[in-house]
Image (cartoon, rainbow, N blue to C red; front, side):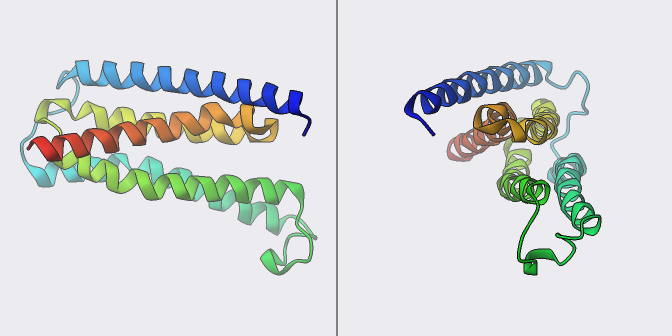
Length: 179
């Protein structure tokens, strides 16, 4: 990649990452402000964790879809049906495996973070969990759609997945330290 191309790609990544950070901040601010307006307020830890687990089914669905895409593409392709033992791999499967790998990494961090946050959030702020899951799913969709367009194309989706989890992890740590 030429230096000019690298700089252009970096500007695109920065622009899309900033947009993801702004959307994340807005959605989480709105969810925080919603209080218990549309979610039941509860002090019961088991109920709070059950809510987080039910919401996180959507996060797990993202992982299931990513796995299914790789499996389906391999099944339908003569060069890919042998799996990772195949001497060559089509660009479509390579791209889907990269999306799957990133999705798995994001899920591994998001699920325990959501559980920790569910146990620490004030009872009237549980809407934040729903917002985190909404951002995760939207981020995975945007990441998959933009993947073929390079780093700048996938930066928004990556940020929309990673920034909410990072904010939730920081929030959970802060709540744990002040509890």
